[in-house]
Every structure is written in structure tokens, then in C-alpha cells.
Image 1 (tube, one colour):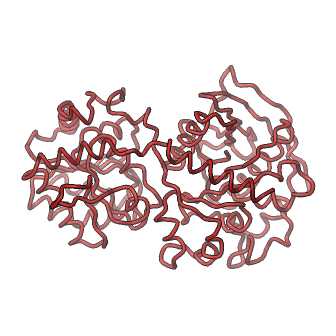
Image 2: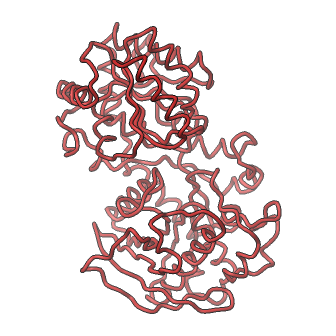
Image 3: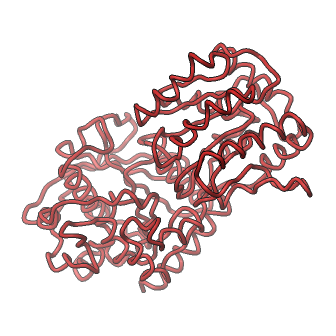
Length: 473
């Protein structure tokens, strides 16, 4: 495994959680799993981590060095690439061309560290654009580097982020300039690391079946839909799972009361705790939560436009947790004064509060414009908090909308991202909560018992690894 993020060491969102969960699941299935991460400035080696010193890294026309810290946890070996010239920052990503050099060095350091450690994996699983040069290296170094015999699996977590840099990155990385063409790394006169990975990887995955289809269209392809259609035979969508040890309402140490699908009464204590913390009155109305980056992708601008009308016409209470677009944060916050008993905006990322909101809310909304997979709706369902989502990407693959006639489904799904759709769907959920509470509780039980663990998804990744290994030969 090679990734710029892995919880709990380094994470900005779903990527870090996905890599952590999948790696743990594969180790539980008795695979020899070793994960490479940069040693960012905020990661501090522990006393029991072993340091492999002065490993040569062959960058273009010069040889640099790095240290590799080795640690073991839950049957997984972690290797942290220590190169202060590149990763002394207290940030995972930085602005400007330097970001490309950082991750180009990381990719080459991973390969050269495996050679120095005398360990050759059968498959290298690369995550997102920051690892995009590894499949390129494996193809261009195939005759002279032992690890280049490994099959490569490249996972697209969000196609919007592609790693675009000036052509000079090629000479820095030691990639032949012959790869600067339209069916490799070149895109609009620049180097596109993700595009290069798509052309060079043995197999490609993304994080839901629906998203794998969507990114082959002009609307969702971010300029690479033609590449993904060309590579469609090597592309598969596999749903992300969640770590059910961490997200478990029966044992979660971060929530005030534990509950199960067969005993939802303690969930009310979790809701009471949220209302107390944010000075919201205790009413019979449902509590709706948002736990998300506050940004255009998530469709929260449309929700913000609709919210005043929902608050005027219902007793709904809403708590929003997240950071991002300051204007959008302020738009939500501006509703606190006219609706003091109904709205709270918390502009921060707080893991403990995220757990408590997922446990304490009745409803959760994520009206995304696009969503490769989404984990927040899976966490919500795990805690009996029914999701209101737009039918896109992984949201469509994971949330079954309520059918009132036969009382099946465990969420509320709409198709078009416009004001009326959000208003009507939230009002629908509000009505079911108030007028058909037995049905609402049946939906909660069904949602909590749905299987979104990593067990099934990790078995699918096993099949992809075997598929890639057989093809690489």
C-alpha cells in the first residue's frame, strides 16, 4: 500500500479512513501488508520504531537519501519515508510546484526502499494522484529495478484532484521525456500524474460502482473521461467499507450512551446530549445533522438556500459541523440569530463531535453534486441516523430510498439538485418521523443492520490483486 494519507497518522478525510480500513481488513485475511507513508512534520517516530538509515533514492541526475522508520501495528508493517527536505511541513499537501517534487520523491523512495529492504511485493496498491508516478516508474524501469515486476493497482478516490505540474517534473523525477505524450503523462502541455497512472497501472479501481460509470462521462470525467473509457476493461468500482470497530454504537467510547438496533432508547440520550451542548430546546421535532466539508461539491450551497424555508415551515433542528467555504459557513451561521432554537453552525473538524452527532441525530443530509463513495452516510446508518442524499456515486449505491407502500428502504433519496427537491425530500423525512414513527424506527433498525464492513469489499480487492498479478506475469 502506498498512500499520502492513512488514519490515524495522517488524514484529511475519506482517503485516510479508506486506506486504514482496507489495510486492516487485508491483514485480518492473512496477507503480508506493508504500508508506505511520508513522515510529515507532525508525525513523530516512537521509541520502538526501527530506523533504516541512508537509503539511496535515485532522482533524475542525482542520488539523494532518506531514512525509513518501520513500525508494526495490528499485523501491518508501516514504513514512513523520512526526508525533511520534502516532508518537514506540518501539512499533507502544500501549494505550488514543490508539492509535485515532494510526491515524486516519495514515489521513487518507496521503490528504492523496497529494494534496500530486500522485499519485493507482488502487488503495489497506489492511492490517488500523489502516488501516480509509481505505475509509470514500474513500466519505465521494468528491465532494471527488481520491484518493477510487481503489478500495480491504482485507486481513484476523487477524480477532481489530478496532480498537474510543469514538464520539468519529469527530469527531476528521472522519468523519460518520451512519456510526455497524450497517452501517458501529458495533458494540455502539462504533466498530469493521475492521467499517467491511469495509462500505466495494471488495473484501476474507484470507490463505488456508480462512480466508476459516472467518471466515464463528460459530466463527471474531469477531462479524463476519454482515458477512462479507453481503460474501461481494466476499471472496476468497489464500495468503500467502514471500520466497524471504530464506528460501533454498542462500544463507541466517544458517545454518551450505547445502543443497538434492537434497543434504540439510549439513542435519545445521545440526542439530549447534543441539544444540551448547543443549547437547543428539547422538542418532539427531529434533529438533522451535517458532518462534511463545507463546499460546492457537497451541494451544501443549495441546502443553505433552502434551509430558511424549512425552518419557517417546520420545527426541525439542524446542527452543521465542518469547515471549508467561509462564505457558506457564514451563510449557515447567519441563520442562528433568526432561528435561535433551531440552528447551530460549528466551523471546525472535531472527530469526537462527529461521532456524537452521528449518534445523536435522527437524520443526516448529504446532497452532493458528485460523491465518489462517501463515508459519512455509512457512519450515519451505522448509528441509526437516516440519510437524506442525492442519487449520485456511492450515495446511490449505499442508500436505499424508502418505499412507503411496502415499507422497505432506510433513507430518503432525490435525483435533481435543486431547491424544490431538497425541500420536498427533507419535508418527507420530517413527516415520516412525526406521523409514522414506527416506520421511522423500522428504517433505523434496517439501516443499522446493513453490512458496510470491509469484509466484503476486501474480498473484492483480493480478486482485483489476483487479476492484476496474473496479467502482469
